[in-house]
Image (cartoon, rainbow, N blue to C red; front, side, top):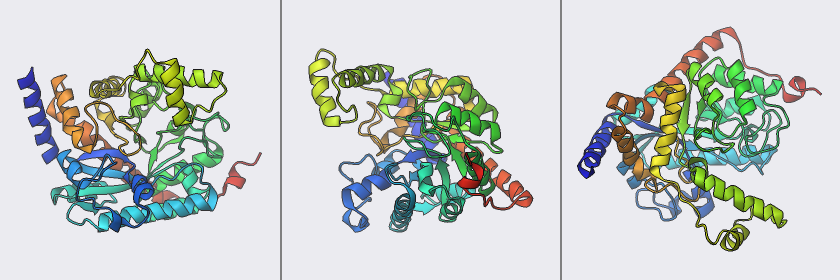
Length: 398
């Protein structure tokens, strides 16, 4: 067995040398902002960076060929503050790329990704996480695209006025009329519509109106772990039928059903005591008392592989990818502790019977196909219609 795993790991590393692994989501930019502020001279990404999951040496060891860097800002920021902070994060990522020209290269198209990879650079793409970043303005959306943003996650953890989040109480009932205009304009621009974080109702509404394939940049399978951030099977099937990709994430609470059940019990106990279940310090205190006989379960690499296998079974091998969410979560599954660990995940799939061509699709081939299809649809739509100029007030009048 040890020899088989060693051989699979060797094969996995060989695949990553010749085919770009395209990860759908990494929150290093916000982590750097919180730890070091806006001055990137305070951190050397070319050396190990303590307290993060990501730096250039580990990206190289992990065989990462392309990364969607999230320009996330918290949902507590709204309006002008959200737009300003998003622009600052875009600036930070551009400066990060410019500061490491031998390792990172800005990519705006699928061809750019392959070109950068062929020169030994890690293709760097930008993704905005949460529709609050555009402050209900399609003009802002267009400017984010001009600055290099190539996907927008329609919501984060809270609703926006035009779309419901998976982790908030539903208000819009899915996607409003203005939300549909946001999707239409994104696809006219060639910006990928990202359905991670949205409610199942919002996802179904998007899939009904989408003219190009969509992505889930960092979500797993709800049938494997019943968390609202994960994707139900009916949505996976519709996404696959439309040509999209679900990029499976590594966030432990989305991966491990045992950990999910443990966390739900803890949250219920905190609510019973009238405590704020989002208070991490108090959660630790209550867990030590209420769950002292049941240590907190840990997620494992094999469980991530279970999600990948499930998405493949339901949506098809052409519709699954990887979106680790490194530096966007406090802990990772055992075996996937940082960005150097991707070869181990590919080796696990090879050991499960995946062939090399299937692994190439998973690691990047599928999402690059979606990217190209979005570009093709954009060219067609731009010949048929101009920019959408309607505002939210015009579209969503009560």
